[in-house]
Every structure is written in structure tokens, then in C-alpha cells.
Length: 288
Image (cartoon, rainbow, N blue to C red; front, top):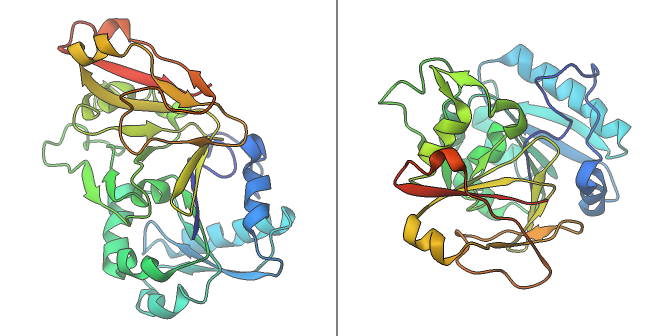
């Protein structure tokens, strides 16, 4: 399986754009997708976030089928998988050379994925998988389901950590350049993410950046913010954290770095001044 974890494959979805999305050329995305695409048209399957949003799911398949055709990535069809055909997933998935994990509400999609039994079905899948926003988030073994709808951030019963597909250990927070200043239930999304990183680390992706995962290796293309909480004592001992340089892709650590990584590291490390009043330091690692 070759897995692409994107914030969005076609620019920021919250900004005006063409009626038919244009696949992103930044950070070699289209180039890398073409490199693994079969030399013949393949069948596509788009697994929905909302299994009952039939009109939305159909329209999404229509426009992305055209997007892939325009990018010379031929699909024979792009079939939506939702409540209408979810009982057929056992035959739909193996027959599809390309699978899109669609964007939408993370907990809703997570529940649908569990209903489908996707974590087990993907064990024997060897095609191309494209995660989009919520789809990239739910691809993780343990998902960071950041609150997104009004009331979720203030709800003490809202579950922010969910079992996912297990296709990667990397937890994704998408659209970071857009959502970081967004106010939800009176809180900045960046502040919500900072607080949640005290429990588990995750990677915030802006639109245009993505991870490419294949053969047990994960490579980051573009820039990202790595959220992790460490003690003040540990921070004092490691003021420099290494991340590989961009270009042909950058291998991502499976856990928070404790020493510079080998091989042409571009280093960036910073403390956020306003957080010094808190008992922990938060490191943001931004890959230039």
C-alpha cells in the first residue's frame, strides 16, 4: 500500500476555488502520485465521512473524478461508499486500485469506518490510499479528534482520542494555517491543540503539505508543526531537535525526538514565550 496523508489534495477547501478542484502541484504531490499510479486506469472508491450525505458524496465523486482525469491519473470510475452500499465493502475495497478517505466530521467518519470493519479489511489492501483531512486523521492507529463543531470544545464528554484504521502511527491535525486562529467555544484552536498535546503528540499540517507512507517508511513533504509536551528539565537538555531537510521528502520520527536525527538535518527549535508561565514547555518543530 502507498498512503498519502493530506490536509487537502487541492488547496484550502475553506477558500474560493474552481468548480472542479485542481490537484496540488506543491511539494511534488502530483509528481509523487503519478510515480505510483498504475499504467492503466483503475477503479476508485471514495469512503465517505457522512454515510447519509448521499448528494454530497455523489457530487464529491463527480468533481474529483474530473480532477484526476485532468491530472492524467485515469480512473474508470470513482464510487462513493456510504450507507447505500456499505454491506458491499468486502468486495468494493479489493476491486479498487485507488481509495480516497474523504474529509468531514472526524467522529462521524470514525464511527462509519468501524461499522465497515475497515481496520481489518485494509490489512490485505495493496493499492493507493489518499487521506483527505478527516480521512487522514482517521488513518492513524490512535486518532486525535480535535473538536471542530460548536459545543465540542466545551463538552467534557467529547472524546478527543479514538481508535483509527492503524495505517500509520502519525496523528494529523489538518488545515493548520487556516484553523490556528479560529475561535471555538471561546477558545483558540491553537490553544486547544497545545493543551491536548500534553497527552499525546501530533503533527499539524497546513494545506499543501502531506505525508507519503510506503514500505514502512513515512516522508513529510512541505512544512508542518510538531506538537509535543516535554518537561522543563528535558527541554533544558535538548534545545536543538533535528528534522531532515525537505526536498525529496523527510523521514518522520515515530515518537518525539530525543536527539538530532541522522542525515542532513535542517534544525528548527523554539519555545513559545507566552507558555513559559505553564509548568511545561511546548516544543513546536516547524520543518522549513
